[in-house]
Amino acid sequence: MIETGADGRITAVRRGVGSPPRGAVKLRGLTLPGFANAHSHAFHRALRGTVQVGSGTFWTWREMMYQVAGRLTPDSAYALGRAAYAEMALAGITCVGEFHYLHHGPGGEPYDDPNAMGHALISAARDAGLRITLLDTAYLASGFGRGGRGEPPGRQQLRFSDGTAEAWAERAAQLRAPEGGHARTGAAIHSVRAVPARELGPIVEWAEERSAPLHVHLSEQTAENDACQEAHGCTPTRLLADHGVLGRRTTAVHATHLTDEDIKLIGDSSTGVCMCPTTERDLADGIGPAPRLERAGATLSLGSDSHAVVDLLEEARALELDERLRTRTRGHWTAAQLLRAATEDGHATLGWPEAGRLEAGMLADFTTVSLDSVRTAGPPLRMAPETAVFAASAADIRHTVVGGEHIVRDARHAYVPDVPAALAEAIGAVH
Image (cartoon, rainbow, N blue to C red; front, side, top):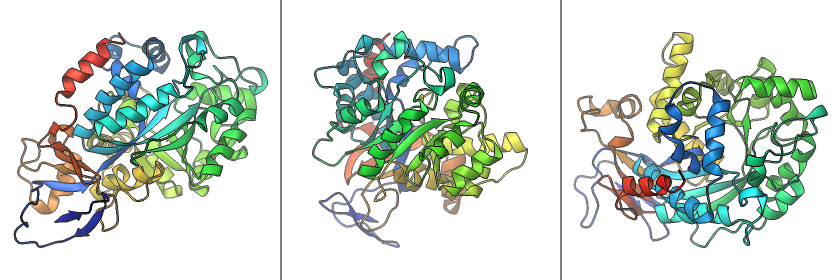
């Protein structure tokens, strides 16, 4: 039995309770800490299905992403974000890390509120019942340029850019999370190709001054590695290490194509790594060296990234199954270890260390997986964690609770009564 207080925290966790007290809510199934989606681009939800036609690479996918990005406004970003976050709540996600780089109006003109887009996403998370860490992202260049000095942003990237890291820091400092405690802010470096090396320092300083999370896309594509080698004579990981980016509060996203030295640099610095297996396979990016990173000292978390699917159980399962395909061996992680990546370690990388465990004093954020669906029925109860990770899906989430409040009850969202309709309307508005 989980007891919660008026402050939205767990007051007690009791085992062996014969019958629930009067007024208690029964959570039938396997109740786990809420999932943390450590890497999200909410507006990418509008790409699902449309980018599955024909062939291509990450770079052709990116052109379609730019088209959607070019149509968004603060109002449509709010509507799409609210619907996408409601889908996450239905999938048992209680906290999302939003890697946010769509800052300005078309052509790069700032809105009257320079953080109108970020504030829209913070409001969207609140109205969908989720906690959010808005990872305000610096995106300043379209490529490395000669000598690594950076190429100016392309036409489609102008609304991403603040021009310089100092200007980014000034704008990001004005971000204000509303009262209620559902939102926190952090920083992100889009990638070493989008932030010239000379601009990295102010971003690191901004995060350090606030003890805030710092995330970065790292070596998702071999083309980025090759271009970095040509511009700087080193790998992206070495470039980040040399400029003080790596460290305990830093999370590298993807980290797919790494050298042995890269893995050692990440592990020795206790940099975290967020793997996004469903996106990495959808974009044909490759399979990252997750076991080697973990052995080197990196903590792993999980994200749905482009939202090809929104299912943290599938991300956890894919981490193991993709590694089985690569190595032709089984059992790289236990179900408990995979669940920890989806819960406690994901929350920690987003700056919510008080979430992700079912213990007294922790935030009362949890989710219940059905154990009697067509996917999960049959195994003995002692195998419930294995059943959840290797058989269940987002469709098996029965309840989601955030701060002691039922956001999803019996697979129905409390604030967004018709999530599919909300998604259809919001996506239709940007196509």
